[in-house]
Length: 257
Length: 128
Ligand code: SF4
Ligand code: SF4
Figure 1 (cartoon, helix red, strand yellow):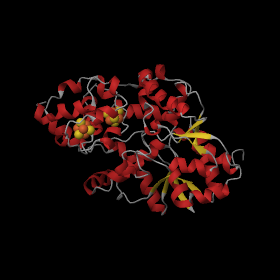
Figure 2 (cartoon, helix red, strand yellow):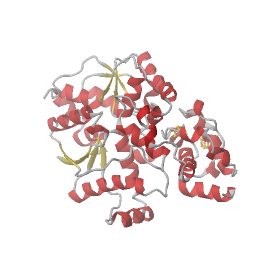
Figure 3 (spheres, protein in one colour):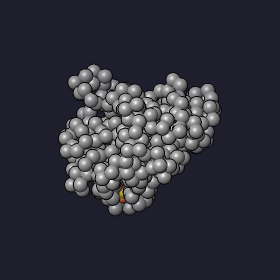
Figure 4 (cartoon, chains in turn red, cyan):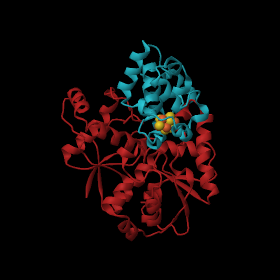
């Protein structure tokens, strides 16, 4: 099984382990990830404005390259996934697509299939198969899945799961042998980019999430987003925050390879 | 700009539908930036519908929105308030010399761990 793969800027820098463990685990699960050539940064957040074209070009180029190669596109970072998926949806509108295509000088129609890595595990490989490959089940570990906003919303476009009662991360946690912890704020915002200019606002949002997870008995919080991780840790989460790919690599026994 | 023209402009940029709002307040109730905002999401919707837009353009509230889409998904009427907040912010930052963040501001805002994602996101939201 081969897929095009879009890592994104942060996975090449501050979140190298999110990327590294994603690749190692994919290999162990029999999936080949071929990195998009010369990919450009997605921009971190989607611009909803209908008259913005330039901010969507980098995503369109990645989507188009995957289509030309004949592969579906896999993302890992929540932000990249959100931006690329929303851009793909915008490109399904003919009028908007024609403007972008004029600019880019090539035709793209929004038809590349985009999988977040979690969806790859659920929909392509299957959590039951993941479970079979687990050599080091994380038995008894109480893990709080942290969705944040970007994986789930806007639901009409992302279509990953029920946005108010998701279970893909809980099912993932069960597949690697651990116990998911349910808590109310798992799909609320960490404060995002506002951390840069208003640390207090980000602290308030982050603490609402991490304190809720701790109070519900979690030992660790798991995320797919470098900015969620940063905000939670920076603002004093009482339990560790780690990437889901790291847990996966550990369970599959490929973490130290 | 004339208030009606400005209203049309915001509706065109956002593709949102303030006229469908039934003033239930659910968007503001769910907004994680509620406390930091001078005008709350339902007020953006309401004020734009009434052409009362200048106060929004001049308010720091436009930089407090986290683009979390909670108001979009939880609005029972499909109004999409976040897209209106974004449109107001764009009308503001697209003005010459009106960038909310510049490259010179960055060094003192950095720490060792901050992910690149935060920087590119802030630039995308706060500047043109
Ligand atoms: S998108 Fe902005 S306005 Fe809407 S709920 Fe989130 S922070 Fe509030
Ligand atoms: S949730 Fe929707 S209908 Fe209710 S006040 Fe907000 S925009 Fe209006």
